[in-house]
Image (cartoon, rainbow, N blue to C red; front, side):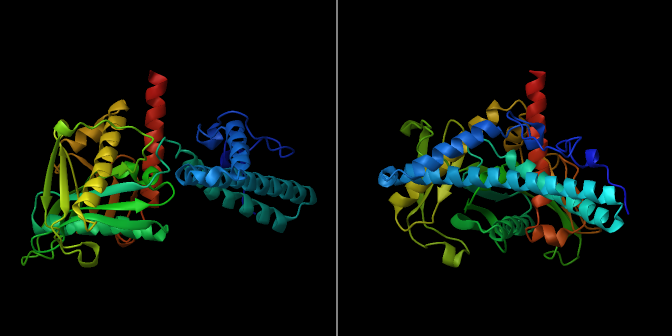
Length: 385
């Protein structure tokens, strides 16, 4: 029999297992964000609205309400399930201790400890409460200086995110791609669609550093390469972003790149530059110039929205990094393949030697830690203010 101190399991565990309370106000057990009363009240409202036969007269509003309903129903149901399982485990443990049944005690302790991972995951999910955390997102990769080596790293990095998205069942749409001179990518933009896509990936914006023996170096020397990732939310028409025509520079060009099935090779590609912020977006996915311009404008609105949101944060390191060169001193994560294997997040200190798994999309540990770190930073800034 191994000792289990229930109070060390979680601050949510009550001192007595006779009653398992649910807080009526935001609780640390729910990441300091999940307001039970408001959530259940809102779910009741959405359930009532879903029975209104006139709801689908406005399909866009209906879809938005149904997504909110599904999200709340999943969150509330998950907490209720966790509460029930924890109460059952505590009851079983009390019974086992009363009967001095060692085997039953081990079973109860194992079941309770198994809930710790689930509770931690739900606590993290409760942090995805930002205005656009539930939205789809645009993910852009840009190779740093270094020619073919950096461009190959950009392609490796993009593949990592695409594998992560595929494992979650997210939809991927290629919007723009500029092939490398010999291999890899100079830049690319994809749209990742799925529940909380932006919320999970929003902390990935920054510079990623690779150290390896270059397959492009005949002398097998070790090289350091950099690529930058930028993530912005897909925003709907309800969020108004004012963009003046005089502030835009619009260029058209022939779609190109090694994308094959992803890229239509026509003269319809569009690149838009927002002159005041020097924000550049491009799209070559659609077959018509008009459609590509429309998509590019949506991408521009998303980038300007993200820019404004970052400006509101007291910690401006992310926005400052976006304004600097892609190189030393501005990294958020380091990927070392030789002479040893280590992936380390420089913000959270989370690290792993499983470099192959990370590059194949197993990045949840980094996303979760960065999300918690960002929320803690915002909470600290709020307390200081």
